[in-house]
Length: 221
Image (cartoon, rainbow, N blue to C red):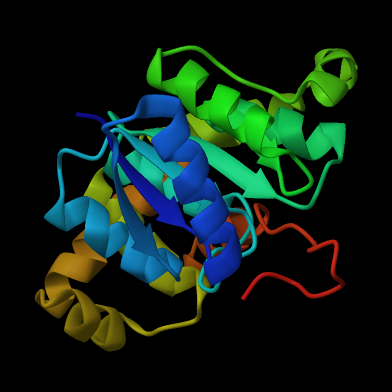
């Protein structure tokens, strides 16, 4: 039985995705999360999750940073991004950072069902209306290099990097992760080397470069 995690802060849209998943896979098990932190916790608690349907602009998700976090910490899990943003360049960036598919929030139920079926079959899915435009969109070499550097981080290193980007101090990060402060410092040394950053400010800027503007006009929380 496939297990899906629907990570979206809008209950009605979660319900629509759940219905599409049940129609697409029949005996699928669907879990839900309303924030990125809840989604990461669910992934830790349920290693059987096969697929995450991730809202690009949910609380705690800094654009593509949520995708990068899941890919770094749970590399075996497929991630499909769900968003009202239909910019082909954004979709191209999502694919370059490891997304298995992209579902616009304007998609109908049949497209949602097809997307879930396709990704569960280990194939990439894009909405028909965007496929040609995304194929024409050029990958940014810097984005590809960044994706590779982020992928080189261990799961624990990524857990340290995220609060660094939020401006937390080493002691605060240690308390949040329940580790020694010297452990945080050791992880930061490795993070700086892997990302090519000289200090925590540069490391934070690198992760923040994954932020995207929400079509509604707000920046990701």
